[in-house]
Image 1 (cartoon, rainbow, N blue to C red):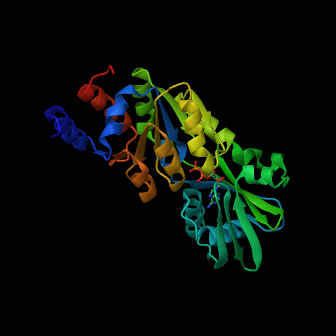
Image 2 (image 1 turned 120 degrees about the vertical axis):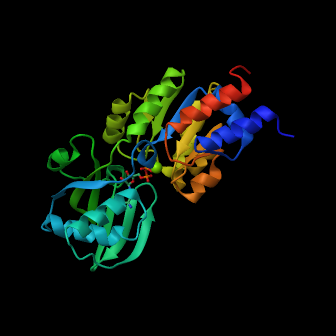
Length: 290
Ligand code: ADP
Ligand code: MG
């Protein structure tokens, strides 16, 4: 039988929007040393707005946005949704795209109006040794914006700058966790400058940028080295292996099914402050000491 105190805490948890899928994980929460957060959709709202477009070639900015939107209308990524929305708001006619393919953690590609297009991360350009005029995008980058490049074959046509907002709840969540003596770290596939700006803004002790989907779990393992007990909080398909690797996997309720199914605890209200609630409740239920 379930001890009364545990039964009570389970219903308390439900009242705070926590779905406990694995009781052993909930019990481990009281011993956590560090919490690693995914950035996009977890600490930030995960809703990108297009802030600007810069062209390198002969296609104008609206043409670039229109073609990119054609490609991105096949992707579920929050960057893709931001690009499609911006094109729609400008009243651009979004073209058909064929042969769409995800470039995991790097972007996507498709055939649009006879062009072999790719919309990709700065890291992808470095991998492929494709050079762009850095001065031309300096302004687009300002304030820690996320940049993606539009390529036709190997040729950069332009860049799109997007911004996402840090959620107000994230500031409070980090402050509370730090006051409880827990290190807060961040993991993201996004570029170094974007990661740094979010980490600085939230006062995070450490962050890892440009982490490819298949590397996220390895990063958690590295944080665990030396016996540290680590939680991972994420929302995406690419967070699932890291949620499993962590001592405690916490999924954002509004996230993907794969993330939810890989987690020990689900934040039903998608509120990062609930992470501090989990730990408080675990400490209150099982005692702070081992
Ligand atoms: P995260 O979930 O941490 O934001 P992802 O692994 O989903 O990271 O993406 C990493 C990077 O890959 C993004 O910051 C972006 O540069 C690029 N990327 C991924 N998917 C797309 C897409 N559909 N369109 C444009 N860029 C993309
Ligand atoms: Mg995410």
